[in-house]
Amino acid sequence: MVEYDSQRLDAVFQALADPTRRAMLRHLADGERKVGELAEPYAMTLAAASKHIKALERAGLVRREVRGRIHVCRLDAQPLHGGFEWLRHYERFWNQRLDDLEALLRAEDDARASTSTPPAAAPAPSPRPARRKPRP
Image 1 (cartoon, one colour):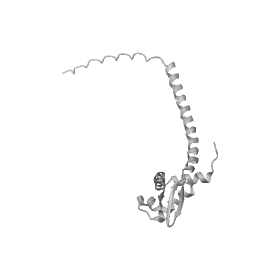
Image 2 (spheres, rainbow, N blue to C red):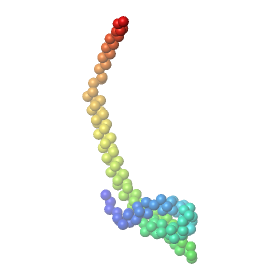
Image 3 (tube, rainbow, N blue to C red):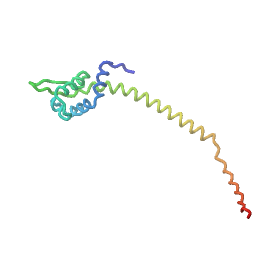
Image 4 (cartoon, rainbow, N blue to C red):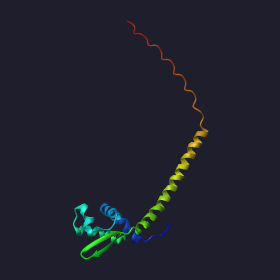
């Protein structure tokens, strides 16, 4: 397995763990946004939005630029590649395990099919004895 910068990977997954930050990244994928624009859909203060943006910055997912009094953010998707590669290793791991399980189950089915004999005809049910009428 390829070695990854553990701290960077931790920061990326921590940033992605929060649904608000994931939504902010979706908005930034469409283009740069002011901090106020990122905060607006969540009715949060600029200070709260700034905390989310700082987590995204620590992960390297967002670059913030100050233009006068306005803070403008843009997406930097490069760190996502490290997370993707880390996940892809485990995808290959589980795909191999599932392929092995499927092969094993198919082999068992094939073995069962080749050794089993067709079911014998079921014996006919024996007729019920006639019911006696009670004596008077």
